[in-house]
Length: 340
Image 1 (spheres, rainbow, N blue to C red):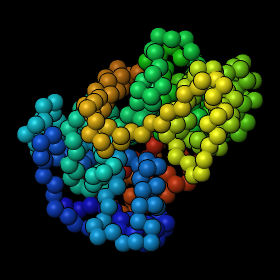
Image 2: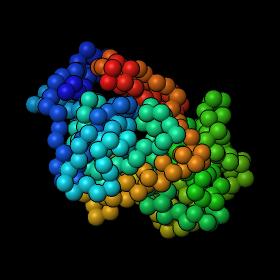
Image 3: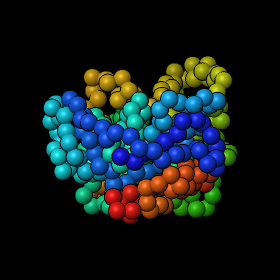
């Protein structure tokens, strides 16, 4: 089968930054399923792994990226219980295994669910990673109570994860949602996602206070942990909770949270699959719940750009768009346009 990956970390404009090659089609074992890929989407993690995983070295085997997919199950392992051959599924996969930038992918069935029936393949492909990240952040890390009348600040509201976090919070909780954006088009976008208020991340503290909030109960940072650290420390309510998905270099002064007894917690969507946690099945449950919300019209796709055809040049184009930092919503690649 054809796959696309890299052996050395290059900038995306290098001819060898992403290459096409042939490998054996994977086989399903135990909890695994093998999926024929119809569409994938692009995430910042794709570009970060490509840029950092093989700096100044050449990998023995090319690493296949891709952490969102929609496709049809072709075969299943002997322990698979919740899915069957022929099902149309969506998932984010496992960062320790080959990704979805290939004709077929093997993935643990416990982190897979039936794709939303009301969406096309590319519309559905943009959901898994962002949905799992946002849902886990809200309900597993921040432990939001769906009935409480509190406030949440989502820093980076126009991005893929921020857009979904806003929609989930609007659909599933009573939270007052403040999302950040600075440009007119991004401000309009986060409002369309369901934000009650829009703050400017370029002057975060003053902007939030000008909206009438002296502090917020929850902060979900999907943009810049270190850059917004002091502002988060100032804005978080005593005994409030902060969650981030953005790694940083160097150190942070966690003492700014001490007097408020505030909590800081990481969200990393791949934790359950990477460590095969006892609750790995929860990712199936989350994606199933998301499908229901989508098919009920309560959550809408964040797809804004579609690239047609599965080849290295198109995957490179998607990487470039994500690396530009100017995209609103998500980018997807439709494999089927080239006869797949």
